[in-house]
Image (tube, rainbow, N blue to C red; front, side, top):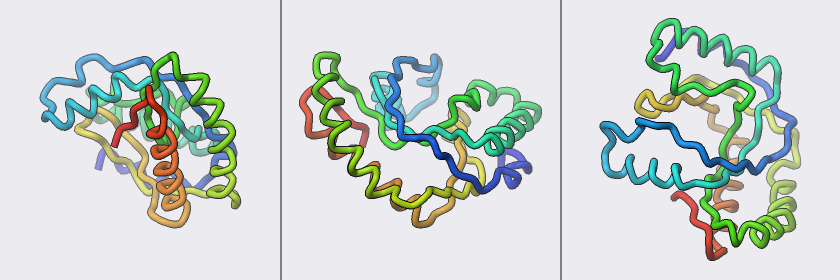
Length: 175
C-alpha cells in the first residue's frame, strides 16, 4: 500500500462528458529498467496522439485525491513525478495514434457513431466506487475502481472504441 489514507477516497460520480484529448507529451526517463514489453508499450504511448477519457470533476473526489497525493509525496518523495495535477484527473478509455491527415475523417465518424454508443452504455447516472491506489512500477499512480456493473460497461465501451479506431487507416490502438 502506498499510504493508509487511500481508504478515504470516496464514492462519487462525474457528470462530465467523454472527452477526446490530444496528448503529445511524454515523460523523460521512463525507459530505464523496463522489460521489452514495457518498453514497447511505453513507445506506443510516446507516439500516442489522442486519448478518449472521462474527466473527474467531483470536487470532493478531487480534494480527497489531492490529500492522498500529498500524503504519498510526504512519505515517498521520489513518487512525485508519477502524480498528475488533480485538475487533469480522468479515466482513460482508449489511447490512439492518428496520423494528422486522417484526423478530420476519423473524428467526424467518431462524433456520429460513438455518441450514440456512449448513450447506450451510460443511460444511467454513473457512480464509480474507488477502492484504493495502484501503481505501475512506481512510475504511474492510479486510482483503482471497484469491480461492478459500471466498470464492466466502461470496459465494453473501451472495447467498442478500440474497434472503432482500428477500422481506419492511419490510426493504431494499443492492445
